Amino acid sequence: MKLVTAIIKPNALDAVREVLASMDVAGMSVSEVKGFGHPLEDSLIVRGTPFIQTFLPHLKVELVLPEDQADLVADAIQLISSGCDQGSGRVLVSGMQQALRIRTGEIGALAI
Image (cartoon, rainbow, N blue to C red; front, side, top):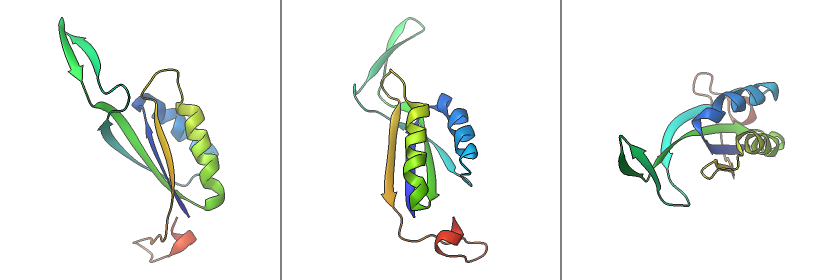
């Protein structure tokens, strides 16, 4: 099993969800997060006053997937979310030792 974590811009969520549904991905968790990368700050003009915004809003999408599906999903998220602008996000793939479905007690691949 693999854990795929993607930090994406909020406007990319609907497209990501549609493509993952077409890939028979059973579910995902989405959280609102804030962060920064390079450059460390973007300046905005708010009501005529310069405003330094150091943390930008993003969404964190998390999926637990079988190993054979994780790389395909990560590539799909990257293709959908990529843009020419900075701050498009990251896709991280890591190992998952165990999964347990709380309601049924299923363990491992049956729990995802």
